[in-house]
Structure formats: C-alpha cells, structure tokens
Amino acid sequence: MRIAIVGTGGVGAGYGAALAKAGAEVTFIARGAHLAAMQRDGLKVLSPRGDIHLVPTRATDNPADIGRVDFVLFCVKLWDVESAGISIKPLIGPDTAVIPLQNGVDAAERLIPILGENAVMGGVAQISAKIIEPGVIQQVGTFMRIVFGELDGRASPRGEKFLALCQKAGFEAKLSDAILTELWMKFILLAANASAVALSRRPVGDLRSPEMRPVMMSAYREVMEVGRANGVTLPDNAVEITAGYSDSLPAHQKPSMALDLERGNRLELPWLGGKVVELGNKLGVPTPTHSLMYAMLKPYIMGKPAD
Image (cartoon, rainbow, N blue to C red; front, side, top):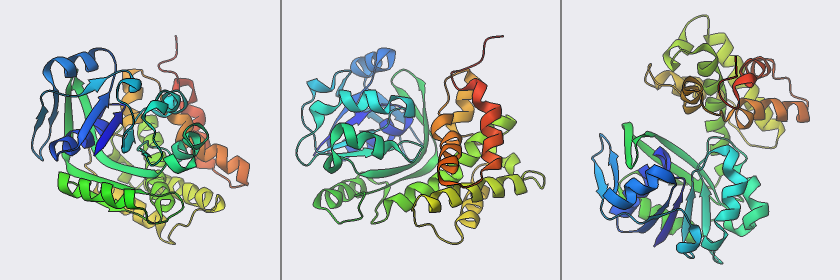
C-alpha cells in the first residue's frame, strides 16, 4: 500500500512511521532542514510506545516525485490547506483517499473543490507529538488513535483496507460511519481549550479551577450549539463528555496553538475559536465566550505583534 504523508510534523511523522514499520510504502513530504535530516539520517520517532528509526526514509519536497498513492494523510497547518491541496494533485488517482488530520472542522470541505469529492475522507488525529530537532519527533504519552471515514457515512473497501493497516501498525483505529460527529466532538474540546489556554497562558489543568469551570462549560456549550445549528448530529451530553475528557488530560498539557503563541508563531485561531464565532454569526447562535477570547487573541494571529 502506497501512502504519502503531507506535512511531516508530530502528527504525520507519528502515524507515518508506524505505518511504514508495518510494511506500507510511506513517503514523507517535508521541507528545509527537517527534510535534509530525514534524507541524510532517516526519520526518528521517540515514543514511550517504542522508538522507531526509519533508515532509509523516503522523503521529498515535491509530490510529483511520488506519483499516485492509495492514501494521503494530510497534516499541514490550517492556513496551508489550499496551497498544499493544489500541490498534491499528482498524488491523486481514481480511488486515492485523502484523510485530513487537522485540528479544525473545515479542511475536508476546503479540499473538495481542489481534489474532488471522491478523493476526500474525514479524519481525526489523537496523538501528542512534536518535532524536537530536524528529523526527530518526540511523542508525549502512549495514546495514539485515528478515526476516519467517508464523509457521507458509507462503507468503502478503501476504508476497510486502511483500518486493517492501522491495526497491523499497532495503534488504535476506528472506521466511523459518522465522521462529522467525531470531528465536531473533538472540535468542541479543541476550540475551547486552545483559546482558553492560550489566553490564560496557563496549562490545561488550570481550566479545572472553580473559577474557570463555568467559563469552559460555556465555551463547550457554544461550540455544541453552533455544530447542531450547522446540521451536525451531536449527543445530548456532548458538553459533559468533553469536560470529562478535558479533566483526564495531563495537567501540564498545552494545545499546539498555545505553544505557538508562546513561541511567537502564527496561530490557527481563525479556524478554531474564530470559526466558532464566524459560524455563530452566520447561523444566529450567540457565542459570547468565544467572541471574547477571539477578540483578545486576534492581535497575535500572525505571531507576536510589533511593539
């Protein structure tokens, strides 16, 4: 099975290395020093699940060098969706499946006009990993799961094939017939936690304080209500499920957007909290908590503002 990883950060490298170790022909698309290190020394994934060192590593910065593949794990930052989508057209054959693994909820709908409706599935990544130096990825903790499925909920042979490969690779995988629900359940958590942790400059454990609990429950509820107004089926206890999951996270953990803020990097805010506000305005759903957090974080969208 031929697989291309588009965006070889923590998410793409973590899944891609495991799939390669399981016998898939995996090619990583990367840039700069990270690409050079992989081509020279191979890709290293350091993990409590067991380290992986792929030598040699198939890696390039040009999708046209790869040709058509069976699956694409699409792991670029949210602001790169359209440009990366155009660049990977040489990878797409009649039954190629592109599985976006971004943080937001709109990557698939943004890719469909570029790659075609048949090419795009939905996906949810559940892994915490990051680049610690060029060519080297560090996974935090042992939890590693992927959820994916056809956007219309139908069963498909390609979905079954990818599920079997993920299981062979040794990480948890689910082929979902309700991938939009799965995407929005993650989005409830991520949109709220990313903004709150970034704004407070405190880790996720501090969101559990008596003062912060009502704020977070309000933020979760706003996303749920926006999702339902947008036609997504969500369980009645979605807010409680989300709060319970957030409570289970390591107290020191910070979402990637909060880490980007600390580093002075560009933020995915417009596609996270900003998307909640945008859809709320469009659908007539009040989002006061997210609107406040978005307004206060907006000056940092392109990185640290000039003094």
